[in-house]
Image 1 (cartoon, helix red, strand yellow):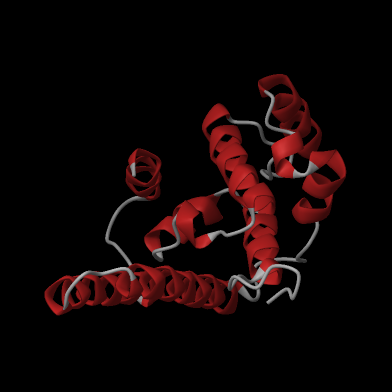
Image 2 (cartoon, helix red, strand yellow):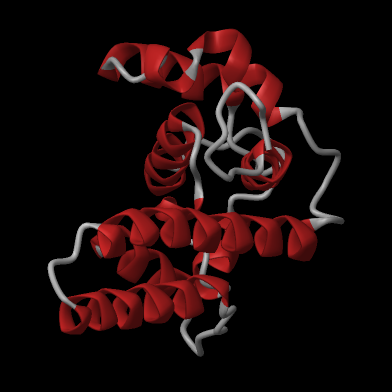
Length: 171
């Protein structure tokens, strides 16, 4: 966790997962199948890069080896106005080359789920503190616990990669 931003997040895991997606676009579908949604990413630039990766994959912006073509990705992000929200071209390039492969995929995904659950807990504690009575607090606690449980469970779905991606985009 970064001391400058005390809200729980895992910058190494976020960038590593995105890097694996740049190198192997099929990892986008795998992330969805493993319960990793856009909400698992905390850093705004990473969320924006994820959105761009999905669009690039859907548009077929690949290089000769099947990876997302970084030059075309950056150019498209500049054209659609999202490049600065991604942290600029240097950040996109750094993220795309952050990890050497997907060797730590499971660990990174677990870290994303755990930090998301911790963010849910912190937000819920504030909401519970604002409740007017015990019944309201119990309801808020129950909702928070369900959301945290959903965040940390890595339910693998029996869907094709295309169906998983389509469902993820709709959610």
